[in-house]
Length: 230
Ligand SMILES: [Zn+2]
Image 1 (cartoon, helix red, strand yellow):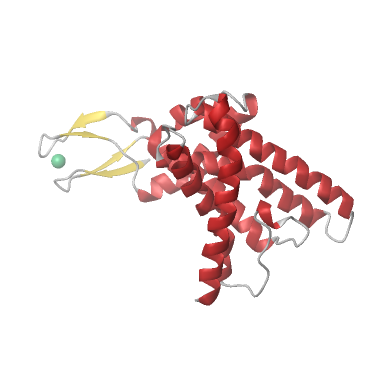
Image 2 (cartoon, rainbow, N blue to C red):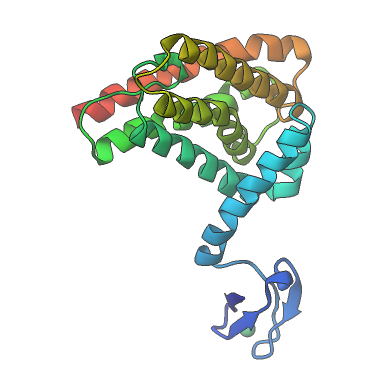
């Protein structure tokens, strides 16, 4: 059920499948398109995130454009933020000193809102980085799509953090291997996104990704240093 309020204040309780459809208001006669309220959107976001993941699992390279189109611009933000949020929470609750710092490794220290912000910093830096560096290379992606790209590119790292937690105290060699594995996946996803979402040539994407990684690491370090001073 979607609770929708017209500009004139008339409230409608509409079925879920009316989302995106247009109606004429019975009170003010204005035509409106049904959009989900904030609560509705928040409930839809994890579903959208899972939807994006499913498309990418079926076609990790050229599925990126399809996933972004299926989500719509707002959907990209919602799904991307859910995935970035899961990553930040994994960093927060399952910090691992064995996960290399360049993969967004743990900052350590005491728990708190500050630390949660620090843990979200790599995701924020990646979003800004993918958007700005991509633009510098002549890319076409919107900031909304950059959010989705960043969320999906961080998924392998999230999985790595979970694995590090499960294998804690266990095999260090396994984690180094898994770290390489996760890094490769993240890089491949970013390369594919540079080609698919930014529509860069493979040559430009080839150079963009390493620059992006450096910029993300640099921005993360600055953000964390500032947050720690707080
Ligand atoms: Zn109305």
